[in-house]
Length: 93
Image (cartoon, rainbow, N blue to C red; front, side, top):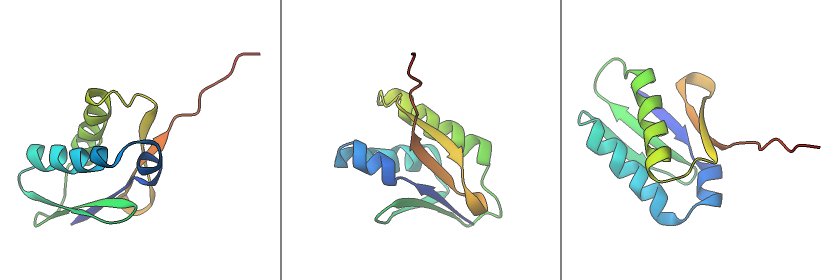
């Protein structure tokens, strides 16, 4: 099973080490998963039938919190993908 994580907005707004740290963090927490990095995505590949989606989402949120990237959020995308997206900040008038 493959789970893509769309990181294009994270790549634009964070430094290059952040993407590598994300891949290392997920790989250290999910031992049965291989992590591939492409231009705009990190792809989690597993031999197992399913990956626990709620756990993967929680790991992504923990990573954003630990690296003090609170301006980003994790949302569900098409076909089982996750998207790390910049939060829209509400302005008061």
